[in-house]
Length: 334
Image 1 (cartoon, one colour):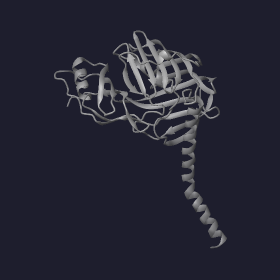
Image 2: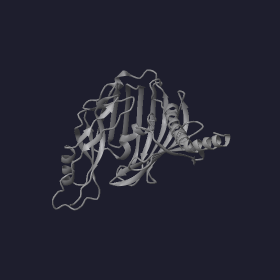
Image 3: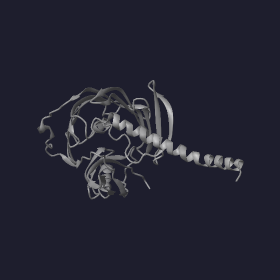
């Protein structure tokens, strides 16, 4: 083979292989950016220092759940922590010890996003499940140059995480969700980062749904708590027992979801019934309660239907665990 032929062959191989190399580099860069966020901002890692965190929050919008509240977290380790969320008459207490978490609420109804403060303030697992990168682009977020990692479509839409390429902190997260049968974009902006115990943690978080403000959180206290009182980590009386998984929980998956019976002589409801429940280690639902009612007739039939659902249980480090979930039950006239 002469020199010219070898040169043409080499160029041909380069053209054929370059898209693969580009895709591999994009996947690697996206994974590295996301993992760096967790390294830079995770104040709850296995080697992290105990702390006291207090945040004020406001639920925004025109719903009955709108209002202002407080969130307090005492964190000694991944196996010993306590969280309290207070909004008007609602008071949630959570205690985590090893692989068990206990939760007790003062009221049946959980107002808006108040029950999600603990998850929102966690920057341990900014992306649960496999990372499959679709694209990476440059974007300015609140005046900061960011690298935005767009993940592949999960069936609802594409999740996007925008990360400060210089510091490695998370600036913006957009997550597609389903609500009342419609696709929505739930987005959170993270700002006012300050250093704490060799980490960078946001002091301000704003979230919204489809451009409408939903919750505003401001961290007002964050300091070391070297010797928290052991009495704080005693499980509350009458608390529900769930999983506390330091490595992250693999969510349960619905396997059988029989439809509810439509109540006779009732008009079409304006929204689905929302139900909070615990999926047990056997994949069966328990402790069901309605968190958004559309009338007793629909609520009763929704509870009856969901009680017959079957799940693949959530998993923690290879073991099935009990977790809480929210589901929606839609009614259709056939």
